[in-house]
Amino acid sequence: MENSSNPLKERVLKVSAAFSVPIGITRTEAWQALQGRIAAVVPSENEIKFDFTFYLKIAASLCVIALAAFSVYNLQHVQLLTAKGEHQLITLPDHSTVMLNAGSALQYNALLFVFTRKVNFTGEAFFTVQKGSRFEVVSQQGVVEVLGTQFNVKSRKAIYEVACAEGKVKVSNTANNSSVILTPGLHTMLFHKNLKQPALFKSEVTAWKNGEFYFENASLQEVLNTLELQYDITIRFDGPATRSYTGYFTNNNLEESLKLVCLPLRLEYEILNNKEVRISTKE
Image 1 (cartoon, rainbow, N blue to C red):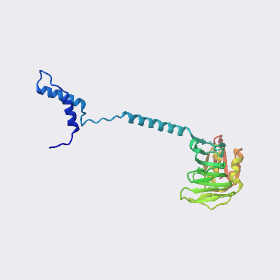
Image 2: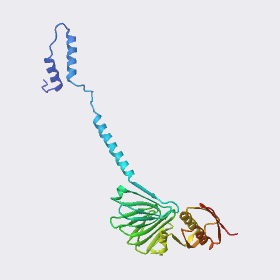
Image 3: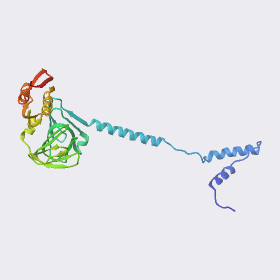
Image 4: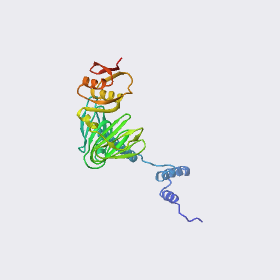
């Protein structure tokens, strides 16, 4: 005889013991009434109760927090642009300063900058960095890392040059992860996708801050691009731009600058309006 207890059977017996068969009904009717009483106190084995409300509240709260964090992050995003013919001095949250040349862009997140001093940059600028944690200038071609120093970065299309005026900087080549260390008076540049060994640079490299632009065996196309940037003009050049130029010009007199560039190369220029210049070779 089986003596093991059955909880369900015991509950049925307990319910049935308290159930009296009313007078005037059949045994079948009494059994159906009993089954109804049992169903009221014994849940169906196939019924699964799961309350989603609690989990929905958690999911909604997480979505609100994520949205708020995303909004705060984007509100702290800073993007600074200089137009053609414009120079601008920028002060960063740590009181470091950046002198932006024309046609340059600087981006950083003010919220994250407190923890990681990093800016994204393209164009040309002179950085004066306050001492402190590591400071990074990230460009497409390379990364400059410093602790506290002064240096010049030029990152335009295929041109990438870094010159150290004070302190020490590490310049890394994004293409092959190579790097060089610069101390005061040294500079490096990308040449055939490789960083050249540090060499002395002339003070003219940073003379653009004073509105002076010096070139030594520079391609004519680079010189014309610089003229366009500094004077906010478009130059229509009818001739080969593969020639080289050594000389300088300033950004305060367009006609004088055109003469300084065109006369040594035997070029002719015509100022069509305040936004357009035509340069051609002499017949």
